[in-house]
Image (tube, rainbow, N blue to C red; front, side):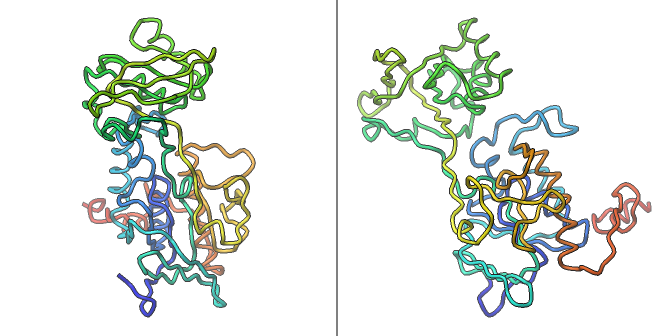
Length: 350
């Protein structure tokens, strides 16, 4: 670990080790720029690893389907040639732009960086799943209530209650429908917030008897001998009913918190950081923001969009650090320089 007397020198500090932050390492590496990555979670992967490691993703180019954790593993393999430093389980506590134009960044563990630029790829910021708070919850074994699927086999032949109406709730309803003993999907209203195609598929499963749809608010947790046996809901007509179940999955989204980033004098709109669309630079020169944490006209929160932003941000970083250096695009398929940086030069020459 560094101290204030021996900061880590780097071209860029990347705040956030989700898929977009990891791909930023790759794009910087192609331009021969060194990166150090900070994340408050104890492992890389951001939401993909923390909230839905087994969730299938269908919109990554060239991958008809790839698991969220598998995507992270592939990104880690891709950036291996660039030897990025990873500083996990710590949050940026202080941030200062010095008179020489560089940045001093210090984490909660005292790790100090002397960085040419800072790239915020913090997703929704420091986040926690919105928790179930219901009467009787403190009387049951907490492992029956989960906020992500770590092992889908846990739910085989079980009576599962899925709470929520967004993409995660719909996705896992569809995914677990074939292995669970029963699934009750409980949402506070009839309309789902997830993708229309997913909502339509869930209704098909309901029509086939594989899923039961329920609308209402969770009033209390029902238990016997310390084990959860169901939940009581109040439906839209204010009638109460007990829905039996032995496993609960809660997908009520995230409670975003920018943490200390909110105090950096950045231009923030609804907890998102405004950037330009040329370099994805913020209102502070040398500070960039990519992925779900940024906003600009036409912004779409796709991993694919974040990858594009990382590519352009890398050129912005290079221009900021080396303003007089001529920029030109080199292609990884043909450039000997790129092959050398990727560690495939010898392989190509054989």
